Amino acid sequence: MNAPLLEVQQVSRSFGDVRALDGVSLTIAENEFFALLGPSGCGKTTLLRSIAGFEHPDGGAVLLGGSDLLALPPNKRPVNLMFQSYALFPHLSVAANIGYGLKREKLPKAEIAQRVDEVLETVGLTAMAKRRPAQLSGGQRQRVALARAIVKRPRLLLLDEPLSALDRKVRAEMQLELKRLQHEVGITFVVVTHDQEEAMSMADRIAVLAGGRVQQVATPLELYRNPANLFVADFIGTSNLLPGPSAGQHLVVRPEDVRLVAPGAGRLDGTVADTQFQGGTSTVAVDVPGQAKPFLVTEHGATEAVRGTPVGLAWQHEVAVGEGLA
Image (tube, rainbow, N blue to C red; front, top):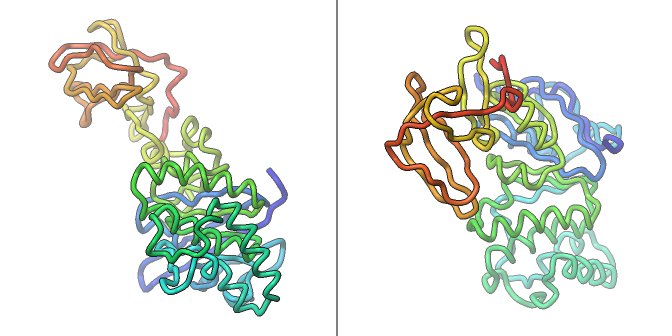
């Protein structure tokens, strides 16, 4: 990991009786694409707003490059927050929207024009410079908001659910675009999302939060293959949960690690309840006696499984991603 840029140390924040952040500690590296991931109410947005300066923690410290960030007002922090709504000015052109913050800082007009032109090229909107936001698609408006944030050259860019307003196809395109831009501009990105697929596809590392606490910080692959607890195992990807070696413990098996075999030839037997074809793969749901939820199996291409057919479920013991998780 590169040198630490942001250090969050035992940060707590309460709203009345609700403990939004409960002793959160994180270290984020220079030039890292970092995701804060978790369900609604887990504390990820409160943490983001605390870093930006719109919330003040009850306790703990936040350091940027070793300096106390909490001592600075929001407008003095070398941090930029890109809002979920994009908040573009409808009466201004794309170029004027992007240069607005630089103009308020009273930078020379020639420098503003140069920096706006550079960032327009980076986000692929040079041809749209004179258009108004209403003349743009959702994906293009998202690019304008991003350009406005990075043109100020913050050391840290915070993104709050940046792709939530986009449709599925555009979201997938913008996930790739955000990753490309982050590498190109060399700014540390911290993105808040509740969408684990989004976090897994973009982030170098992910912090999974629940109940105001950090459950695990790891790379996407580590989270998927070595979850720290049952919450992470169930939240990241799709899981089949089985009773573990001791009471209250579980074994986690991923659907792609399971094979359909003849009844009696696997570890479990069941009956095919449903099949879904999703293009490159199929998902087979198998009802297993004693299991509250169907056991899921992922097969490449179209499946030959037929609803109502008895089947066996087989997997190698070593592919179980978590044993004894609680």
